[in-house]
Length: 301
Length: 230
Image 1 (tube, rainbow over the protein chains, first blue to last red):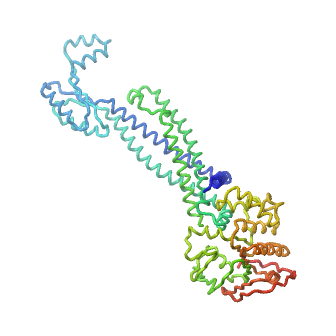
Image 2 (image 1 turned 120 degrees about the vertical axis):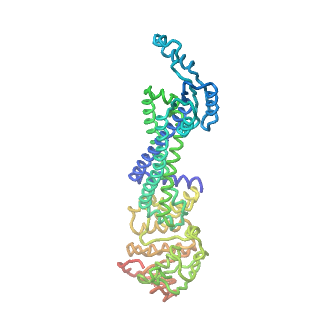
């Protein structure tokens, strides 16, 4: 195909969009909504994953030991913890250390500590880190089976919520992507159908004078791609605005930030390029495929 | 040729149009004229027998190759089939764009063809602004523009004023004189009698007459009305 021929086909495609603008607008809207829903759920998924990762890095499981545990048992427990599959780091935290840090953090209640004298009410503990929060429940059950365990404190509930949220998001995302791709394809191919119908005379003549299949199809293909392209540009802008607004709101929630950590929320500026590429690619691909389906069906050369 | 509905449209037809011929195909409605054109363009396939057009054996021609065949044939329809949103020039240039001709060639070739049919003054008009005779001349220019070996004219005078019919056939005769084979389907016997030449009469799917007659050259009134497709 010569350059002039291709230019002609592209112009035809642009022309199609304009001549068929009502239907083109309909497919634009559907594509926009689809891209937004899919995009935002993917971004939510990425953030939850990032937050879970952040908690995994900084959070500890604290294993309190019985007060009467002797040194030998202490070492045994330490060794046992070390060999557990999900455990990455084990650190002993003696009751003296704990008492000192407690005193420090409650300096204004010195009187209280004086009344206790040398009597340390705290117990020894191990602080461990786990590699995978998904398996934390299993790990804790294993620890419970050891002797001399007084109690275990883990970021249980919060992690459970996040892990559940992540698995729900995975499902929602999968369903959304599948549904939206199907809906978008149907709408786009319908738009193409009306476009083909509007130009049936031209197409009939093209066939009689010996146009190749591709020559007839390319303008419709381009029409779909253009619609997809504009939908994705709009989707990127909307996603950006919504995302930044949500991130700003979250960053004002000090209580929440103290749990999830400041760095766990992904900033839009750090991911805008892949987001932009994914949107444009997704939009243009769905637009092009939708029109290709339709031309295959309605243009029999 | 038998349609899937069981209708025999053409039966045991054996016909050879030689290069450079000008042949009229006549016959009443439903005689099989349109079926013959469809066979020649490979819109449909013959259920039996062979169709060879411009050296292409259509029963063996693959779908992908149909455009190649059609580029060697020009077609003129009864209802013109011009694209209403394009000017005369664009309608004709469109054919060359479809076959991916160089822009330079299009700029040279289209005005030349328009001058052949005498429509220089109307090159930038839209089909709606033209008379029936002018529209058909545009259609002929369009059929001619990619220099086909064969032009099929399907009732080209069916939708235009009788007195203009002669002009159209004259134009086709002129094209034929330059070496293009012309197959013109018509049911206007007066026109045929006037021009003469090779006449092929199809009746009920069979060729009942195929001979060359002498043209009378007298201007006989052309019957109008009943211009239906066969």
